[in-house]
Amino acid sequence: MEVSKQELEYPQKLLNYMDGFLISKTMFAACELGVFDLLLEEGGPLSSSAIAERLGTSADGMDRLLAACVGLQLLEVEEHQGEVLYSNTDLSQTYLTKESPRTLYYSVAYYSQTIYHCFAYLTDAIREGTNQYQRAFGISSKELFDSLYRSEEEMLKFMQLMNSIWNICGKDVVTAFDLSTFTNIFDLGGCTGAIAKECISAYPQSRVTVYDLPKVLEMAGKHFVSPDEKRIAFHEGDFFKDPIPDADLYILARIIHDWTEDRSLELLSRVYKACKPGSGVLLVEALLNEDRRGPITTQLYSLNMLVQTEGKERMPSEYVKLLESAGFKDVQIRRTGKIYDVILGRK
Image 1 (tube, rainbow, N blue to C red):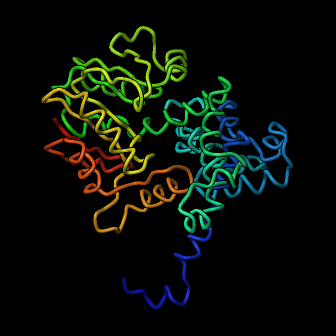
Image 2 (image 1 turned 90 degrees about the vertical axis):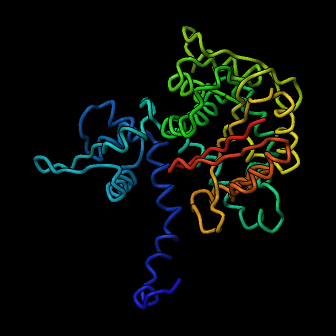
Image 3 (image 1 turned 180 degrees about the horizontal axis):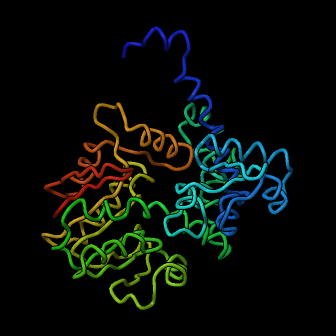
């Protein structure tokens, strides 16, 4: 790509990239301190000093943070009777407050408390080809994951994180293909049941079973799936070890990208073996472009898989190869125009 003379004289794009983590941490800090939640609870604008006092921060630090949030269009600012007052924008109120039904707060917290620290060792991850939990947290990725199950509070935070992205992408991934012919659906690793709820909303004739570990299902039933919802069932199991029951369709949403080629093929082969002729598997993943030119979000996600897991993000052709190697035929791809896309294979 040819670079303009103006860009060479003043490289605005590079300066913006350098500021990227400053922008992220500013938003993260405002969320963690509770700025957006406080303004929502107040129901009206507040001064910088009032916000600082209510949240227990320095007045100067809060004043600078609020100013930066205005610049990022996360807060509105107005002057009233000589006092400067701040309030949420529609964007921050909808996505950055904890109680919003479309909140991304828990994703923001995970980025700040986990991904940010792992990315500090991205150079090491690239040199070594391994995740960086040991350097970032002093424990292995398995030990960190296991720690999520040691208290209900920590486990709930993790599940809220897993749930939050489907607030903005869930409907799109379950309607990218017409799944109405699949009436008995198993969501493998379905966690909170968010995809299951989108499925039964889009396809009223379907019944969806969330297949996951016992502790996960206990929390899902307690916090995420209404006991009155008769079309969502739970099935305890480890999909690498335990039997996979009969179904018309198996959904694996953000599962395959966690694993190596061998482990991914092992799992897909187990699913294929459980399939009846005519049944299928639906993968929900962030897809890279075949020309390697994007999407940038997915390319960054692939680096995140490097610093955190054994897996990676893949191109459509790579998923097709995995599915066909497991035995699936007539593999089709659908782009949703959002973060996550879908791949459907049939037996």
